[in-house]
Structures are given as C-alpha cells and as structure tokens.
Amino acid sequence: MAMAEHKEKALGPHFVFSIGETDHLDKDELKLSHKDILRHLVGAGYDAHEVSGHDKSPKKYIIVYGVNQKDAEQLHKMVGRMGQSCSVYSTGKQHEKRYHHGSDAGKKVTGEGVIMHKNRPSDNYISLPGEQNHFTHQFMSKSEDSETYRKMAESGMDLLFPTSIRGKEFMSDTGIVYHITIKLFEPKTDDPKKIDEIASKLELIPPSLEDTSLEFSTIKGRNGNTMYVIELHGPTADRIIQYHQEFKDIGNPMSREFQPHVTIEKPLWDELKGSGAKTAKEAGLKFGPAELRQGNRILYSYRPKSEKLAPSKKEEASQMKEEK
Image (cartoon, rainbow, N blue to C red; front, top):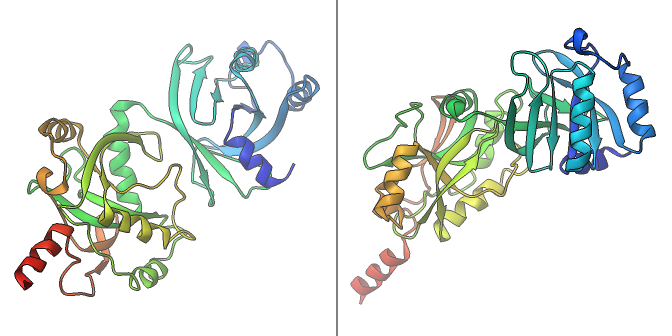
C-alpha cells in the first residue's frame, strides 16, 4: 500500500492499539505475540498494519482501517483480553479511548480531530508506514484546556495581529496576549528568517473595526483542548486568509479550514456573546500591527508600508462626502 493511501485511510475510520510488551501480564488471556495478533486480524479480513509511534516512550501499534462501530466493540474486547491498557476507535473525526486495565479501567475519553504532521512530534503520535506521515488523536479534558493553550502558546511561534478587548491585552486565565493568528509555526523546524522574508513582502494590514463582523463559536485546538473564539468575517478579515495562504509551504498544517479568530476566556466569551455585539468595534476590539512571536518574545514587527491603513467602506464613504 502506498504512503498516500495509508494517510487517506488514517483520516477515515480506524482502530489503534499498542503491541509489544503486555501492559498487564496477569490480564493476558490470549498469550499471543503481536505477529500472531496481526496475522489473526489479516486472516479475519481486517485491513490491519503494524506501525510505530511514541507515548512517553517508543511504541509499536497495530492500526486497523475501515472499522465500523460493531467491529470496534469486538476489537476493544480483544485488546482487553490481551492485557493492554487501552485502545482507540476513531471515525476519522470523532474518537473514543477506552481504558481496559489499571487505575483508569472502565473509563472512556472522547475527542475530535486527527492531526497529520509533516514533522515527527516529540510525543503522543503514530507514524504511518514509510515514516513520512505522523498523526495525533486530539484528546483533552476540559479542566486542562487553559493550561494546554498556555503551554502551546508559550512554546510555539506565531505570526499574529495583537488584539485588545475593551482595553485588556492579555487573557486572565493564561496571561497570553489576545491575538489573531495568521500562521502557526514549529520553532524546531521553521526558520524565523524565512518567515520574516515572506512576511516582509506582504502588506500585513489589520482588519477594519467596522467592516469585521463577529461569530461566537468553539473549536478544538491542536491538542484537543476546547477554545472559545470570536470568528472574524468580512472583506478585511478575508485578507488574513490570503496572508495565511502565502505560508502554505511552511508552518503547522491545519486540521480544519482556516478562519481568522481571537481566542478568549469563556466568561468574556459569554459576556460578549450576550451583549449582542455584531462588529469588532461594537465588541471593543482593537488590532495592532502584525508581529512574529516565539512565546512572549517579539522576533519581528510589521507596520503596514502605507502610513494609513486601508479604510473601511464607511470610512471611504465619509471621505467621498468630504471630497464633494
């Protein structure tokens, strides 16, 4: 099977469990080697393959493609009888991890989103055959959301428009600056100078306050954390999508269609949504010149080449009246 086909199938329904050393020897009823298990699954008609990965330490896994809910129930039972701690069934969009043994036995953790990585992550990933594509299931409990977002922001590199909301510049629960991400990058593999070379050629103009309409929603972060966001829409917000596309060959791949947004705390999200604010101006948002940040460090700043930012439609209409 070609690497591209493995990638396509991993984005669809699949089942994954670790093999090799048995986690709980006293629970191993089958006493079969991982080769015997793989041979059994293939012989039973499953599209099963051995893959590698990392979960605190290097691991070997079996991934089974094209699994339905009925198949998954049987496979979960088999993994439990093997003495393994857990197994994952995914529809490709939503997934469930079941714990069979140990202190978490009987528990289930759900998540949403499969992230494909061009570069091998440091932990919690599975590498498909050929070792060119790596993927991560997004799992996270709600209590960990803010801390996960903080750690992710502090360790990452982000081309962004800093944002203030009603005079506040930083999130109260994480201390992270409010911002609109243009593109996320991986500090270990993406060169800031190359990013700056591309960014410097662009007219990175913040969105207009009056022409930017708002939509309040939630999304899943790269690690499965729930994020409360203000989505930005309108012609000057669409311009950010164009900026994002200029970096299509570098940076972190997206697991969903890119839409400019500002991540905020849930209490503030509830307050702004309840206020009925329809535009960035009504919500009290202000956008600053673009910056390339690594954690809290500003590596490069980008002021628009033109002295005045592009006017909004209302500003243009006002200017036309003055000229008349």
